[in-house]
Length: 341
Image (cartoon, rainbow, N blue to C red; front, side, top):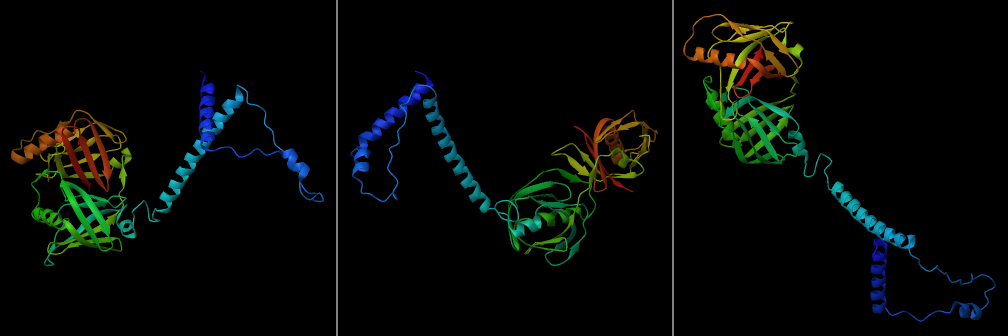
């Protein structure tokens, strides 16, 4: 049996079942009605029976199948359209579903730490840059405490934020300046449970009763991998990051810096010896040739720093400049972070 014949058979069976459940009314004799109808002066139109040709095999059965399929598709499309209208009607004008004016005031902006106050009002110095970012839907938070990265869930309301499920990396932060541990401890203490918040003039203030206050400033990040941005600047080493997740981040044991000239030549020092190398800079990539150096002998932390700096500044590396900071990364080894000036 062909597909057309199968469709006809299904329609025939359905028709028989319906007729068995719904007895047909008495037949109407249109000729009798026409003959016995009272004269109406020509105002009433005659009743004319409509006749249909008998069905034949071929295109008429396909036509019925096509009409049936089209009807189903039309109904489905109407349902989808209705659901879309309902969904769009429930969307806040401030963003996606669930977005509130309070969420909009925090989301989509990166915040950098500019002030710290203990619960008793005592101010602490910001030793290491720390950041905070709220997801666009206002349901999560991410940031750094100046060394480790953290993230968690949040519920933002007007005036308060409920923070939960905070997780953090466990990078060892060694050789940090005095006061760094106090900064980290205060950030961890404040960004916990429920906090109060306000934004005024691009400044975000977060307070947790009994813990302290964090003050952040809204920032616009500028990131570039244009090779021209490398040249003409003396880059001063500010952070050494050994390894990846679970590695260590530390301040340099001795001053170190690098400089690129217009030909791509790298010069500088690693904290112990002067260094030089030819490079081929690309967008986000840097190929560093054989590193030349002087032969001063250093020991202890300065020798360890020299060894690490030279292990990063070798071969093919990745780089980028974000907010005036140059980061050079050697896969499986670690990163060097430089500040301009």
